[in-house]
Length: 636
Ligand code: NAD
Image 1: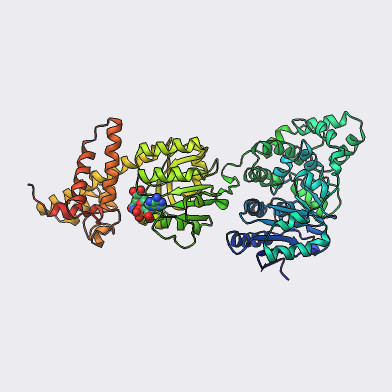
Image 2: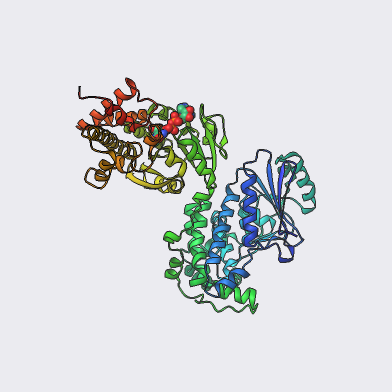
């Protein structure tokens, strides 16, 4: 029998944890399987709700299956645990941000990994026997799977108390603290689930909710707020040791068992996460600790004592009386390149402008697991991209909206429309080639709406867009660049951050002005070589290895049959169309005029491409078709 039972029933997709002999503790394979189902279902319009529950009487899910972590970590292999945590945290983030409502039925124990599964979703139901806790400190870990965020959001200092003492919450406490939403007696659950499957209507949950009673935590709330208000864990311990109330005695007793390092780090972590107040940031913070927990913390000893040998006598690295300020901050230090990076896994992307370039770029994004909604006034969406019918629909819930449009006028009018529908803090990423002034205007519009803007024009053409090997020249803030970095990795091979907004376009037009000039120079030199009786191959062999070499000669040789394969070998079909080169050259001249820069070669190249495209046969041909143009002309 499988550990996960997945099925569709009417309007509902259902996931039932089926490992009741192990209190439904979640294994690594179960994590991956749940993620696959959620990925499949979250954008399926036929599914109105996802239902998450567990078999057996005793637990929705009592935690993560940590024995395999112990077996590997105790032999010095820390990678298995790190991978498990990273993948589990990715699932936690997906459950927390799933666009389809998820209803969790949290009977019996919901602890640790079970909280990560059941307590971030949109509708969390508890019953009379629900017991929820974050007991990680007992095994030398900190409350993870996003639990630090729930604890940070709890009223007053109750999160600090619950995270260190692992106090179990009944249904009323769980709702009071924010780990659950609805109290519905368990005997009503089968009927409710049936109703949800039949109708997909979540009103049924609200109608079934009843009074869970008075939270027990209210009795100690004031004492907790006083005792746990210290900045560091050592302040809390000192306060409790110097107070002789029943609460202090009982709390100190609870704190005498778990790992002191884990508890000190938990306090520090909850304080930091309270400021971040965001699931991905919380998971990233937790991962800093769990990543180091086996190698430098008490994790292995904790599992040995509580799960393997069951002697309940762990030999922690530190004592409760130790200050542990340096040690806890070292456990939470950023991980640098090992950092948990979930952004790439959780992005919802809107894509506007699905033409020659946009279509393959959007396709690459979906192929790497992103959810992409697309809109174009004429072009169809490629496979995997969900077509929507207006600009606002593209922006709804999107982390990033990408535009790939013909020119600055269109980019500005689309930006004005899309920005009004984008969430604050999301990123508008314009990859079109447009004028610098328009890019800076869009940046200002975005700024006034609290949206980040990046101008990120590309080089590499349609072939680069298809291959995912574009180069991005990016203007905008460091923060926005950081948010979009993982997308550049998917769509391209290189992204250069060129400075503030508009600088991406500045870099692009300067680059393309050089390209236009060198292509013309290369083409006219070939035409001259012909007339001088110099064989094209000899010309290529010399120039490509001498001071006249350039990308136009070496990588994109305009002479058919010479050098690497290029549009010249395909009857000058673009490639990079001459009219696009003309567009970029005009942009360079517009910018040069605005900035009062003297660009005589750029002006000459613009005039030549203008004549070629608008008065000769250049339209629809590759920009390297300047070579047949020159070879057919004489000096007059
Ligand atoms: P394209 O004409 O094939 O695609 C542009 C798309 O935008 C079209 O599908 C069009 O229907 C859509 N569009 C226009 N107005 C719209 C609106 N208001 N709302 C939604 N969609 C709209 O052009 P392309 O070749 O994909 O180039 C796109 C951008 O990339 C341009 O700025 C171009 O300069 C730049 N670029 C192109 C290349 C290249 O080789 N094609 C290389 C580098 C950069």
